[in-house]
Length: 356
Image (tube, rainbow, N blue to C red; front, side, top):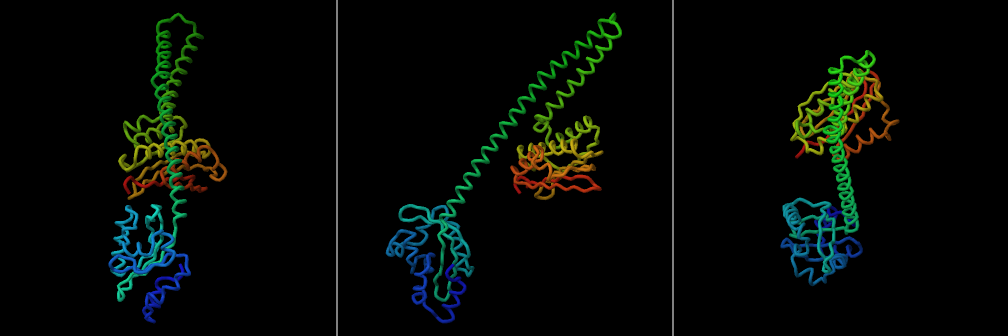
């Protein structure tokens, strides 16, 4: 600003400069400069105030300052003014005013109250252009966020539909084939040894098919998440991972479902899925430990293995890593990758607890 209000205050008090003597200097600045009385009326304003507010001097002096304020900003601005009159200088106060042409004017104020003279001396910068750009940016962000959430919801809905069809139809058909094979084995004792062996092979394959379909159905859409909660779902994911890959997976938690929204719980489940997939593909681990812990206002999901790990920089453009990064970003959370030659790899996700 042209001069800080602290300097102005020193000038006025030390040399006993009057507002009238000091004010001509401020006609040279493009900033808005004004002197207001304790009664809430403008006492003097520079040319920039007249140009920005689009009112005449007579109009500006005849109405209380609050009448020019944007209705939505009036309450907090008057509260800050009350603090100012009690001796607290205001710096970088942003608020809105309405011009005579009903345009919104954003100003950034720095103000000081001169108690001995019972006036407020204030300087403001016009930040309307910057605020409009910020608001447009925020509106675009919210628009794309809404689209992303809609896309994610549609994807999860499709996954759920596919999982239902796999579990309720394909798995049922496979079960019927399995039962028919078992019936044939029991009711056709005269089959030769080769046929019996082939029947056993078909029976084994059908059992494996049913299990695979059910595992795939769970991976696509964890129905347990809504029915039993995130803890049970992650524990089930651990058990399935151990059964399929032969790698022990331990799970511990102090988490409760009402700590996070349903969408956030689903995102953490997907992150855990991707992390375990990376363990399977890249780590060479012999054990995995998953913890889901509430630590004050933060929820931490930690997936740690004792393998050789993977180089995040080399695989950062991979689908799995990007999925984790995007999921965590949608939660406004943080994700950390830590690789140690002695202790393996640890992925930590931190998100804020609901209502924190």
